[in-house]
Image (tube, rainbow over all chains, first blue to last red; front, side):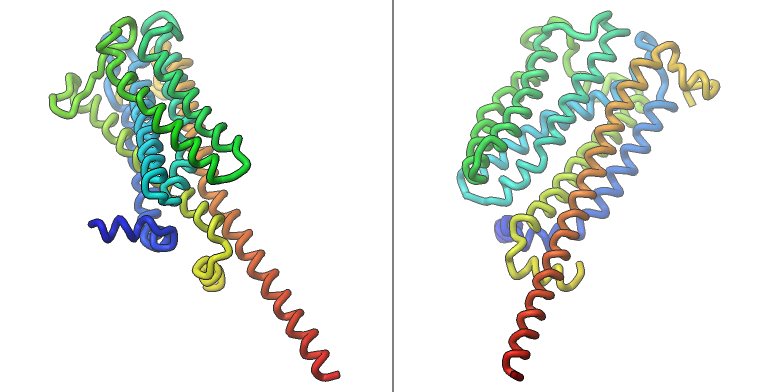
Length: 246
Length: 72
């Protein structure tokens, strides 16, 4: 296990090992999101209170999950980079940040348009909504901070530190609905309990959540591999790879 | 199927603007990010190949001028 992880930390080994994962991941992402999306939009029953606006759950919840998970992944990568000086962790952190910002935006946007028919307002300074908005600004901050440094090393360190400090916002987002219950409802799902909705409602959601995670991993792997080629373009193994036309 | 007709599906029981804008924004993000990741990959590979070709040409040119000097 440790030997495998150690190998994965080397850009060259990482590039070789992950080559086989790409196609299955992209296929899984497309298949799960298409199936979950069509099921949720056209086949899942409408909610007896919310009607069809309930279908927004199938994009809102997966986007909100990813928005938070990507930030945690970014902070973990920052920690690995700072403690063990593994450059690959920093490359991955840099490559996943824009997707995290995008997912946070989609979670906020889909929540706002869901709020209009459901709550009668698209925005309120509710704790969950506000902490998600802060998450969006944290993403922007991490991306901008990295770009503000002339030296790559300096930008990488600053971005890592901000991600590691900013991750404190994640438990705040999670518990905001319990601590300050003003507008946003508490979590509808938990790993330990049976869902409080029928299977034909939560199964498409499960497909969407899995599909979004597959998409995140596929995008991050693909982009990190490109970044490896860019940064190691003068190394012999990259030259050999190009010569072979692979 | 939760809808009787295509028009009922598109109308979303009066919630069309909310449902379709939320799904539209999500689809746009997924498509743009997915397309960008693949375009970036193609671009990096193209640049590497171009550079390899250029270096090969330069090496051949250097060889040629060397041969010329030797034969003279």
